[in-house]
Length: 271
Image (tube, rainbow, N blue to C red; front, side, top):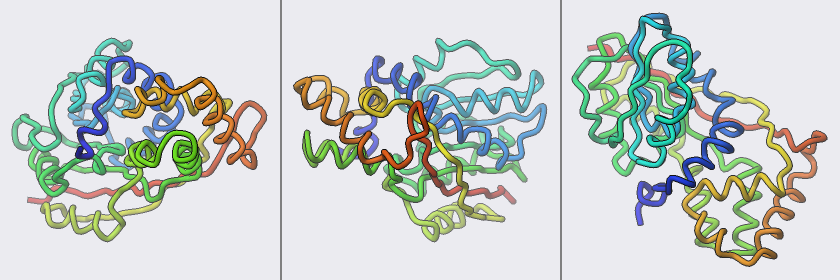
């Protein structure tokens, strides 16, 4: 099973993704990616691997009513949920179910391409990078984020899955954190024809609510959801307790707050 197939999820999982993953894990990063792209009023923006649209909605607010935003994701469940959410203030958003390897939009039609935590899932990364450059206007900008480590929370969840479920479940859950290193990112962008390629490390503190509950809610939003749902209640309870115990040092009263890092790659299309 390839990475792309691993992260096809059901409609129910996509709804859980919006409630938990988009809100707590990815949402706090979305404004930083918009900042990195230097979005301006009136611009046209493409969000690749948009999920339920957390970055696209921030972009819509940044480019305003005279702008335009397109959100593309391969997963029908994610796009379905994105279409049901309230429209944000600002630009209209068009939601399309498409692959990052075949965007099927015209050459040079957007000012900025955003991609938050999507590149690691693409089975042909060089092709995806070429597609993102193809749709950029001359001088257009790419802003792409990708994890630079498994992180303490995902490590804790993976360890709990390995102990109480299986090593396969742990590996599938942690697949989203298996990302190219900095030098490979730079090479991918340069080989695709991008200029002004820079990779920096962005850091924030992420807050998650009570972990014995949140970890299970999070797992319900991933491809391992069916395995967790069919597990004995004691297994599910043990997973939640184990994650909470492993991160007790980060307790902040109503959950945990822990430091997280990601790579942010920026580049321009200079024809």
